[in-house]
Image (spheres, rainbow, N blue to C red):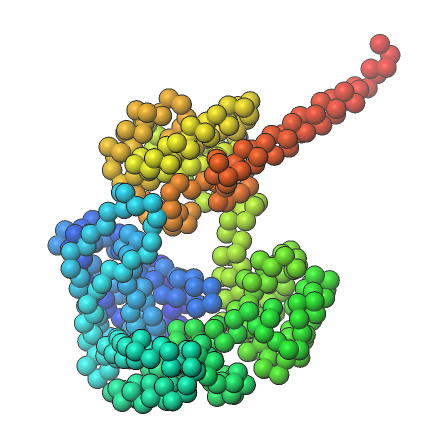
Length: 486
């Protein structure tokens, strides 16, 4: 039996009010992944890169899985199993079969968790318009031509090469699809932008000014983001970083900032202006010239005031992504088992300051660091604890850790729980985090033992010691009523 989780609110977003009569059926097989969880996502937006989880299935003993989701327009879907993914496009009411060779995933001896491709072969039940085959053929033709003419396109900036590229891609079958034609045109526009073979004003006039903004087309959004990359910091001739300081740092006002941005001729259109701001928001947020709290206020104003629902969603996603591991944010939960097989979670340690160490038992650097961290924590008078989180795939690996370190500090076994590894954005081992007594993040990722961790722990102890001194001072100052009589 398949265990399937439906996320109905997200499906409503993807489908729209009339989408339930247009279900897309996706079936497939993934030999070697029997019993694993497989997930289906759709991009919320291509600015933040946030993907909405649509459905989850468990791959059956015969390696089969299936999804059925409502779709009312062409969308790019993502299938993920473990840390492998595949991307494909879907049409409303269509059916798709995904087939793969034997699935092999073993990160037991990998220091880094890199995204890998599953390698599905996609069979489309849309003979009149096989969109994935069309995108594949176009992408291959484009990539091959660019690879063979890199010098002419990017060094010599010879526009004749780009003209020839367009002739080649135009010769591919035309399926009379506005979506696919836009995908082709904006993929080529992105190459033109990168090659700098056309003036920016010409590119803007041809591909952006007066054109529909295609939020759900990845080629359009890649082009748009590339064209306006770092635009608000270095790309505009009408204002520099200093000009933006006033509406951001002093006024904290979204509308005032939009008025300032509107001075540039390319940003006179309100919708384009807001989208450019969204594409540049992360750089502004991380730039030392601008106040983060002020930008947070402006972001919240945009979410409340923008006339464009797509922009409100993008800003929500961008802000969430930027603030996810900032100091003061609630740390994601960790749930698993201790060395005795009893349930254990991060919340069990909320009365203490915690150093979290994500590791695997084969990682020699991880194990060497444990000894260093342990010595550091011994100096902290028991007010800071070390929590070792094992992400080992096999129970036997965790048992080995328990035999070596189980009596020295608590060990939490999450195994290869992909959801918690995703929640904590674990991409390499070892990984450290500092958490306060309320379960909030102090530092993520935390500095390694040989790269400043002890100094960070000393800062925590100075704060704690100062609190102790303040508490004692308050007690000395306190005099019960009538105390002076004695």
